[in-house]
Image (tube, rainbow, N blue to C red):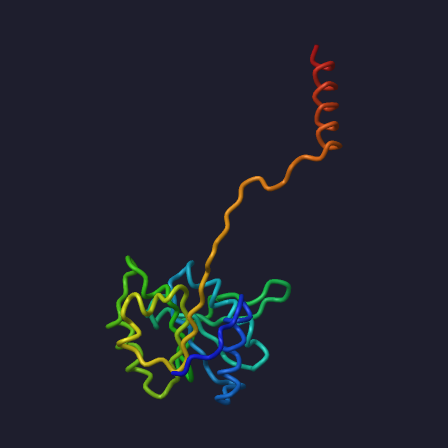
Length: 185
């Protein structure tokens, strides 16, 4: 796998994913199956699915590697892509393995991933992770990815109460307090 030029932000994750599918002639009716940790990976899967919604793909979510729980991913107007309750039969053209599966304390391991991949030998294998998770968990040594997108979230800035009250707001609060005090006397 060649290392391309660095990408930035959310488009740096979505564009190479979409480009890979387009370049490899994925289109109407082809099934893309996303494997991930419920809750943690789901928003990223929905984001990836949204980026390729115009390709006419059948998109499917599988929690962990529990293929019997496969669910269709659908577009909801005004919301975006959502996991539906519709059960799906899997015939993946591409399997997307999310990096959350390789994190510590997740109830799956690389052996589970390899068994799942062996069931669908003819499909492409795409890995999407953050902060070198596949490398840290040594999955990169065990799985041959056709495409690997490894994003970095660094730095993460956290702020509390970044908004200061304007003089006008302070005046209104002070006036409100005076009025309420007079009424309560």
